[in-house]
Image (cartoon, rainbow, N blue to C red; front, side):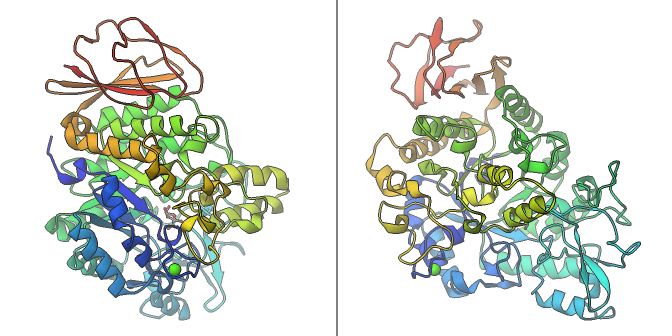
Length: 563
Ligand code: GLC
Ligand code: CA
């Protein structure tokens, strides 16, 4: 297997608006990030992924870009960015940018021109169609509720937006769009950025003719994801981007690709494809949603056997052929300790156990800001306290369709993207040390207890545990490159796997719940020489794994064995 720096790295994701505010306007900014580079260096991460910082009217917190070569005013200036890049590099940290290629803001000059008349040269930069039978051109449903089509008075046609109506989709069938995007990407590469996360990249191509999705229930809009996700033309475009541009730079790339399994993912990340280094898959993020239900909001309990199946499949299929991106959280997902662990009594233990899992898998681990201190979901009382456009659209839509407010709010408390977007909790002072002003979204009231300063002081904190996990990765190649094998596939509470590389074998034991199950390892496992590398509980020196061991709630242990 090829060894490269991005396989050996740990990535830390920053959501700038919620990271740290340096000037008291309640909004996180670049100078806030700059002042925390030493903190990130201390933590031991290698790469910082910055969510979008480009000029934007902020309907979707920067994922609606109005100028790709300028910085959002509230975040600072291009000089601030250049300084951030310089200072990061001076510390040996790399910067990965978020690249939003599927759509722009409706305030981007291209779109303003495009909508102005049917024969404007920029008309074909976006996807315009006439209505059908007095309604939109097809029945596709937007990720953010409602139709993907918005009627525009000026020319009497509709434009397509997979996300909010303020995010019109670019028309990648138009070679001028391709040229403009390549030119922009090269501009950032020349600045010296170290990689890109390609937002919503699976959707840049749409089915030819934009046909209706299958609609057995005659609904006004249907989830037609197959008609705009992971189509062949996406691969053509990515391969072109790679060979013409990315190939010439030593960078890392990760694509956001929902709706695929590992076999399909290989067409993006297969070693010989010349497209992307890795992709974010979503199968494990869907384990708590009713399949065929109304997307992520229709919640069901997740179970460990399904998680094992999904993750083992990715580990096995990609091994030696492509590379995984491993994550529990990002700015679109609930907080993992609330979702997959226990954010009450066993918050610390379960956060450490979940971290152990992601860091011991094959693939590059991603840490989302605040995860390293075990930040939790937020439960706001009122919809007014939420800020996210997806959340608000869902709320409005559901009430319109007659759902009860209580039920809708319950789903929002569990799944709203704002769970991950409350401000980073730096210390126990007012507003968690995030701002001296009024934060753009309320701070989680548990900040007095859960914050970086307290975590730094406590040698047993989640934060120190993350540091140790990251350091272990630098010490033992088997953690990076070892081959994964699942043990005890049918155990519903304990997740056990090994990773093997040459003479080294890691044994990872994880109790995923708050009970105390008995563990019995397969007798063929050679335990004669074992060394405990890390655990979230104190483990006695003579722990005998040969017999039956009772695990403690959310216990995690990693041993080094001899292969
Ligand atoms: C991606 C981003 C999400 C954004 C959407 C539209 O899914 O992660 O935050 O809303 O794309 O750009
Ligand atoms: Ca600010």
